[in-house]
Length: 163
Image (cartoon, rainbow, N blue to C red):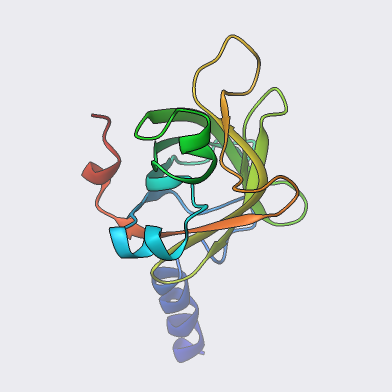
């Protein structure tokens, strides 16, 4: 009996967030895509991304913030926004199909798949950046109608601090 309790506690400690059905685990996740990666993916619109997911409230919703530096290639270059840093407030929870984070006002969402090193975000529409319209100013999808995934690694909280 004692070893079963120990194993259960150990799994909860080793796999944070994976045992929770509310949404993605809180924390900071980051990625800076290097020049070689961007050359190999010429349509990629993101050169750096930070995602901070907060603690969930009683309703299971967690606040989150995303910071994105757009690459100077693909749609970002074509639309004249390469190099810009855009931010977006998000709400994270289990949307019924698993953990995801979304933008209010129908600004899109991304699913979150967690593992020991970080998260993979997949979206077919996610608006980021301030705009006078509801949602955001730039869609992170590289080609309309085709989902895109971004791999972020768990990082120290300071990596998600604003600049």
